[in-house]
Amino acid sequence: MMLELRTRFEVDDVVLSALHARAFGKEPGRITGWARQLERHALTWVGAFDGGELAGFIQVCWDGGVHAFLLDTAVDPGRQHQGIGAALVARAAEEARAAGCEWLHVDYEPHLEHFYLERCGFTPTAAGLLRLA
Image (tube, rainbow, N blue to C red; front, side, top):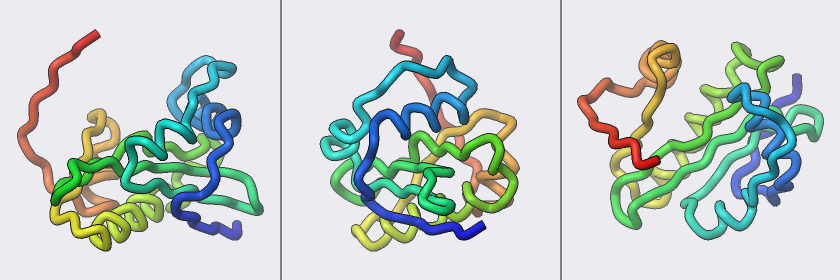
């Protein structure tokens, strides 16, 4: 595997939507306007490419100040457990730090606790969540 991490790469909405659907077990076929959404709302984003094929993705949003937030961490299911996700998180953290952020937040489901705490070095914190829809 020749993994290449690309920051703020040119996003193909169809390709990223397909990766996202596979990674999150969603129905394929729904296309999200990722390129426009990222340009408008993200501090940065990182793609993991293996032989030119998108194998993983992460975006970093922020408050315009010292807080950044990881969203949409996705690795193709056939390529999981190979260090791609951890490499994406590490690069996202570097990019957020370079932009002057002091804190990097992430929300995750319980089955991902080991990944974010043990593999990526996050500290557990108390947080709240309000479902809006």
